[in-house]
Amino acid sequence: MLEGWRKWEGSVTLPMYVSKALAEFSIGRIHLARGDTKAAKEAYARALLEDLSFPMAHADLAEVLLADGDSAAALLEYETAVQLRQSDPVFHYRYGALLLRRGRNTDAIREFEAAIRSEPLFALPYLPLAYMEELSGSDSAAVQRYDAFLQRASRDQSNLIDFA
View: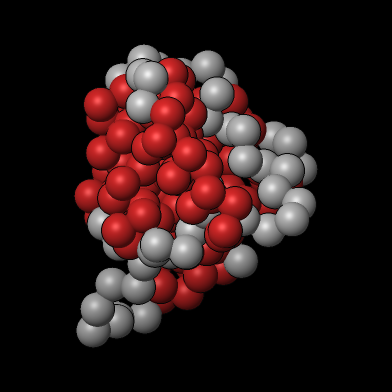
């Protein structure tokens, strides 16, 4: 599809550039679903060459980089995704979870709280905040956070412990 698109583009004069970022991003998702992280990483990189302001490509590239063990690069990609789409609670949560795993607790708290400000009904950020409150000895604050999580979480929240 992209080869055909590029050939067609080369044969006509267009009044503006048509980005292929979404197509490359979709190809990255397909590669990822097939378990080919190398090809997914390449497709996400091509998507970002097309449109550096594409936050989903940054976030998905961060996940691929994490799978490859490159958490430093993943942090940069998540930071970029969060900057590009500051109102996305999932980006804030995922970035916060990675920061927490890297021992950057203060920064993680900031991201979890930003996720809650973006979407107060999003359950997941309340759990690591409760956990950190509990570890710091703030039992009453921890109980409030756990309660907030339980009020918002679905009954089967099998993906909730990805911050640890």
